[in-house]
Length: 250
Ligand SMILES: NC(=O)c1ccc[n+]([C@@H]2O[C@H](COP(=O)([O-])OP(=O)(O)OC[C@H]3O[C@@H](n4cnc5c(N)ncnc54)[C@H](OP(=O)(O)O)[C@@H]3O)[C@@H](O)[C@H]2O)c1
Image 1 (cartoon, rainbow, N blue to C red):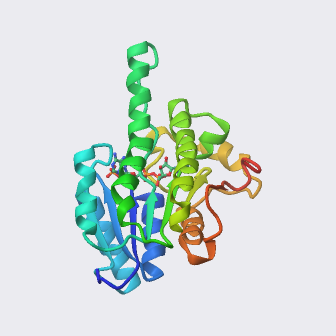
Image 2 (tube, protein in one colour):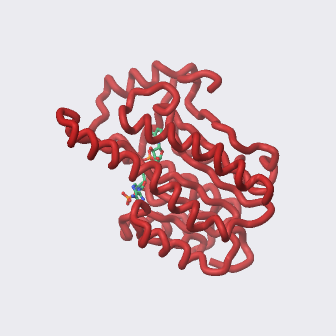
């Protein structure tokens, strides 16, 4: 990583949508720091993207559980004195649980908020002083589940990101920093569904779209590419749905 390139931090950048975002931004000339819990996954992705974009050192890695405040400070340490051009909060996912008891439900709620909300807020707050002023960008990856339900506590957690994004956009606007949400619909070829996906589930989600296909990680990466670009400087506090038309206009 050089000191003159723009710098983007992408959480969950080792796999799926986050890896596609990291690849797109590295291809655009950014240095990218990818963050996740599994060091070996991050290292393999960083090596692959570096080779693909012809800059072997373009992608750095930090292994950290972003729900743990102490580990989040590892990311700020890796950034050092460099200004951060973009923080892309993509880490997260659905966390299951025993919904048969109130205790189980509380655990399930907290796990989904930890994975999707605490990770995003802690990382953004840790890097907030380092964001480039003016011109910094914060993106939060939510979900169509925030807009139409279907994921229980996961839906609630992703919806919480929207309110927090509006709040942060208000706080950072005067510094020339934008804050936006990208809300993906169904995206195949990631680790998100694990062994939960069935051929019927896939077909139903594709049928829900107006364009008749599953999303790809690159579809989401293109939306992020726009929102972090200088061209999007007048866009803040917005939710951009990238869902093939599965949910309309909100
Ligand atoms: N795929 C879809 O259909 C879909 C639809 C709507 C929204 N989304 C959202 O899109 C985002 C990316 O998901 P994906 O589909 O690309 O699935 P994925 O491949 O499972 O990616 C999730 C990433 O987040 C990282 N992560 C999870 N918890 C973390 C933590 N506590 N600290 C640091 N990193 C953490 C994971 O890495 P480690 O396990 O190594 O930590 C992983 O790289 C998620 O926020 C997801 O909710 C996905």
